[in-house]
Length: 492
Ligand SMILES: Cc1cc2nc3c(=O)[nH]c(=O)nc-3n(C[C@H](O)[C@H](O)[C@H](O)COP(=O)(O)OP(=O)(O)OC[C@H]3O[C@@H](n4cnc5c(N)ncnc54)[C@H](O)[C@@H]3O)c2cc1C
Image (cartoon, rainbow, N blue to C red; front, side, top):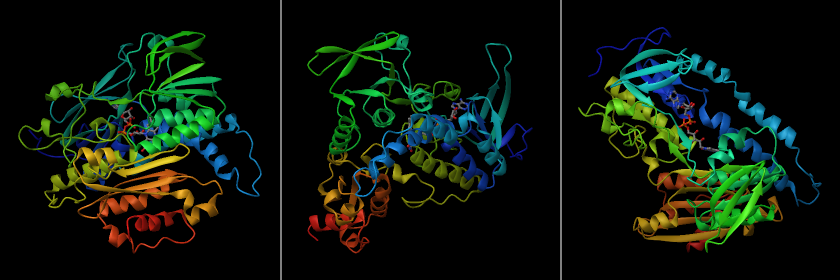
């Protein structure tokens, strides 16, 4: 049952209104919103405040990709001299600067300024509303444990961990995970990458830009979660860069003897060996639920933390009084920083509203519900071309039994694009719900597609009819004129 009263946020106190386990981008946001809602908040972090995103994921990967994108944007523009090869040493140094070389003191200061108590150590649930934090090295007998009590809620925001596929010899081949790929202090001569998803494609491009000989092995096509034309465009571009892209292929064995040898089978089962300096495994991630004490509250530690749209873990609230919440990668919903932070804003606000007895979520798009998780999620892939999409893909719309019209436009044919770059290439595709005449999905492939996406996201979330969108006049000469062409292609 809920303890009687809340206490303040003094670092010495062991009772807080809210305890957040995991100070990644998502946990930080949940903590911030709960604090702004007038609650005392502690956040528990086992490694670095800022989480995977700041040190080993979004931030370093984007710094590694940006120089190649800048060079490509300039290449071929009349009057702009050839930039020539990139400088890997300068790029890795810039990456280190952006990630702060593993120093999280800036983020710690931010927590402090926000009035959130940081408790360093590994947090585990130890029953309802109770969190045990272990700091120090258990193995060396130097660990100390502190028990915290939450009067209102515990939020689990522990993120995800990479999955290593069960391939004979792989573990002994000392493979890279995304952490190694984003934090490497030198560029290997050659790199073989397992996995054609977002991380595999982005790292293939970044390392090819940095001068490595790259082989990318994907079981299906590339970017399987996106529209097929997006993955095909990225595959073409990687091949143009000199990356060997093997689709419909799987690694069957790996062994290291200095270099690593990976045996790859094609769709027909024919095998060949690929030798490389390093092997990066980018075959997916799984929610980090294994060591969070879920079993102490009757939950399965092997499953994602399933939440409702208020971000409550209902399975933990037998008496109908939600106390356990989760957001971000650990929920098994989409694994992106922005979508996790969206859930986190809902989470912190819901906890504060429920504590104050002011929860009023009487409509689908209430700020207290993560409604966009269904049918309005966004994703951006920072390859060349960039790929970005919102809402449903055609396959998802068909699976949902939705009757949609698919309309696409080549971005290169849009006036604004030809001004930007003589070789501008890309495509935008929208899916229009035939009955309601609203956009339920959009995919953009091309330079700065991530920036182009937000217009589509607003249309999807706002459920704006295609007839009303016709009145949203794009400025001339911009690539956004594609919206005009889409309307024309739809018969307007
Ligand atoms: C290479 C790569 C590139 C990516 N690029 C992008 C991108 O460009 N854009 C994007 O939106 N997403 C990107 N992502 C995904 C993004 O990194 C994640 O979705 C995001 O980090 C999830 O945030 P989170 O707070 O849920 O988890 P995390 O960032 O993983 O943070 C979880 C935190 O919890 C801590 N923790 C875990 N267990 C405990 C415990 N028991 N006690 C205390 N602390 C604990 C961890 O140490 C960590 O600090 C990328 C991912 C990868 C791998």
